[in-house]
Length: 259
Length: 196
Image (tube, rainbow over all chains, first blue to last red; front, side, top):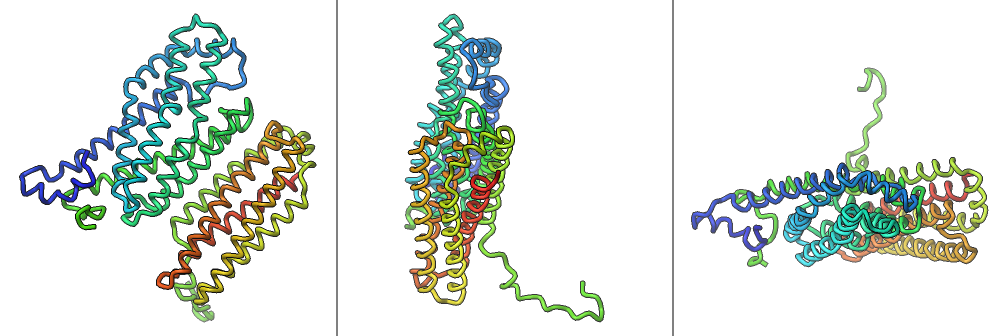
């Protein structure tokens, strides 16, 4: 990927006969990888894996085992596919981190965002895949174990709030302190809403039914609506930011050597 | 358009007609109000489904504490509004003192809320009761906003301390956020303490 230090040297690159728009092409490629990954994630998690909208949290062992059996084919196809493309999460974090590095708020926040989202991907994504794949590929295991995998997958997927709270906080701070206007300030506020929904998600560990269960109106549906809005805004803003990546456009940040 | 023969009222200058704060902050405020509105509607739906249980639990809330907190927060909003007027008139020191009073009211609100939470939990009213799960979540999320509001007031205070800055627009934005926190509390108070 084009690095912060490399981009200002675009004019120099032209002199040496390198393609003028190489950096832009790379960024656009990663942007589309980001878009395709999130689309694949939605299909794998929602349509095939049936984790969103989620199954009921207030079921018995037998009902949980029956649900896993009923949807085993979709879970196996969707989640094996997601396991294969799981690295897309890193690329997605990478392009956001790349633009965060261009903010005047400093690189440290970009590294913190990448690290927290990277750690968060384990409980918030991988554990669900591993739990439900184990449950569907080993249906002969005891119903107690299947029940545990059913619960563990969902609670880890929806209730793993700490890393994401930290990531959104870091992103919001970066946007507010950025003077280069890489992302508009209102996006920082939209990110603050994400922090609030992540904090509310803590309730689902306690409740088995109602508005605060893992399938609750507040902990899930309103949170998903906000997350969907956040991703939609992010896609548009990243596209705009990627569109500005050209040797012909002014640098989006202060060059290292000029500081 | 003014009809011929009528006395047209002169339009105020553009500076007076402008919206306080910036568009970014209004995105935050309107969006936040919408999200809280969703939470409030959810609460009312669940309340309607178990009206007797919710009413029984509501009776354990100390309405006096709620009233005191409401008065404290409304007073803080008054101080905040006066701070904006002061900064517009160039009275930065007075604005700083008023913002400090606003923040002090916010801290007082938090202390009263902490006392109330402690009292409720001591009496065994925890999130295992459906009404109290709403109570703790709504007041908790509001407290998070209030903490952000205190942070935002700090930003406004820092702006006023620097003689080269002192932009009224920044103070307006910060106070707008504070008013939103106040408005949210008034609705939460009505829903949790008064609605039967």
